Image (cartoon, rainbow, N blue to C red; front, top):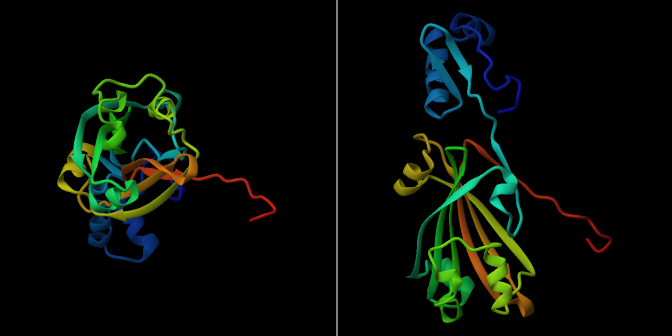
Length: 216
């Protein structure tokens, strides 16, 4: 994880690691098994143990980005009017919401499960409630409806995945997920969208960038 060993690099032998760290061979084997189970190492029969080929997928945060610009694609899993979870309903100010559920992939590797919620009082019957992809993304529709995106906030936490999240994101046993709870505001502080993003903790890092001003 620190980059001391490069992706695809072979680890020293069990005997060498045991000598380096002053532990028994069984301790080394147990540690290697844990790292294999968590997806950091790959064992190759008769060849040794290697660091996985890919580093963590760095996601530069933004209110919206074109998936193709970052080498990822997505599948729409569902679009429906739903009873919003309590924290989402509290942010939206409504119980009913239009929810768009998507699975993002980098190649064939799943990297994010996201659910975007929009107040049903004005989103129902619009392109946001259509199962088709939205040309130009949701911000285009929001602007047309009078809810242009102005600012957003993120709350980020880590927790064990649900069964659905573990299956869709192929999360190894014992590995947590990152949960981004994003609230997007329009004019006059109106909440236009809430998106909950779930990312595998073992292969994701988030990058935030903000310009510092004299007022900070």
